[in-house]
Image (cartoon, rainbow over the protein chains, first blue to last red):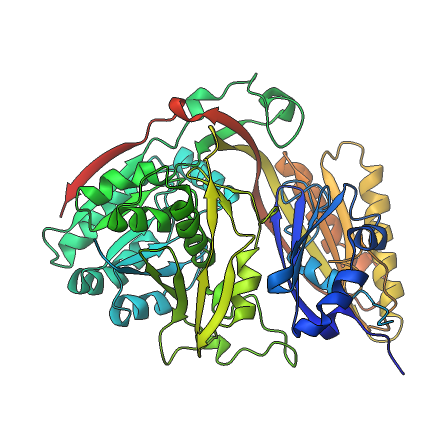
Length: 106
Length: 445
């Protein structure tokens, strides 16, 4: 095995913003990978992965029948589009932060 | 009562493409063509434009869009619904009437929906909803405040037989829900049907985001013909179910994946999506590919609408300036980093500078730098300096400092560019819905 499995290998995602809240939905390509995604990508895992970015809580909503997870991250947009001087002040690219996380298939 | 209604979306944001909307108007066989062109910040920019010139403040592309689609919409009996009125719906409506006359489309009825502008109801003591404190605490001049209107504001215009409905701040999905409620005769407390219509609106309101835009990831999620992506169409049944599709011979794709990504776009709790019309429940929605580029969506629900309307307040935040210099080749990262340190030292020394400063390096950390550090051997790096400030002189100081790096900074720096744009800051509050009174004016070309 050369590289470890990334969320990006099994799922796709889209980021949206409202104020300083970032919401990212993550969907597996193949339904049989959904249990793995659900087990590996917990709200705690996401919060712990980016402590400097996500300063508020992370809530995970589950849409089991559509094989997707929705993460709502508070105080996660560096102040939001009003205050952030990030080139990407909406956090549009943050979906790829989650897709870049490594997951353990076991 | 109609069995189904066919709605297209010809814009999902203020600067969205024009020519695929003309294609929809000509070939779509649409009952309604919706242009959704407002965001919180575009609204605030509209207020700024109107302050500078009382005849402006509407979407800058309203003239081009109307001129391009009105003839086909007239010919095909397609009603146009839009929030392109922004901060000045009356001026946008009058402009549209003038264009219809120029095009020889006598008799076109243009409705102007207002009442969303609640600036006069906002004072220094108004409590904010999205953060602690009041309008006074923001310590910036208010440029305008708008309540999110719902379908109740649009229905009188549709009942009056408008060919074009021009509004300002109407909630995005309500632009689509209003024609559905009108044509199907849905009651305004039929929460389940309003939830279904809200899903239709939510899926369409961002235009190509459901037909392959904001989606492609080469090798993982490939989208055919992205350069010629088509705008979406929804065929909505009287039972509230719908099929999302697009015109044949357009680029893009409509798949369960594109629909699912858009279903939860900017949604927090899927079981409680708040609009002025309903608390929509997307949590049991089903998504099924029925044929190529056609996806059936059903099973939405809803509960009682909120008592209060959301209001966005726009503040004048001064200016945002960005400037950069690039470094490439051996040791580029170290040279760019040194350039950033020089700018930081010199601007920090200038105690008079007031504003928020950020320095990063494009190629290394400009997007995800706060979240994580990633090692890269990238040898093509751009120093980026961003400053938000109220005073123009502070902005100019920063731009000059970055440009001076060309001779005074590290070796081999090139490609200086600097830009300044106006900056608005938005916050939200709530108003009881009785305090917001939508109005209607009708004009005939």
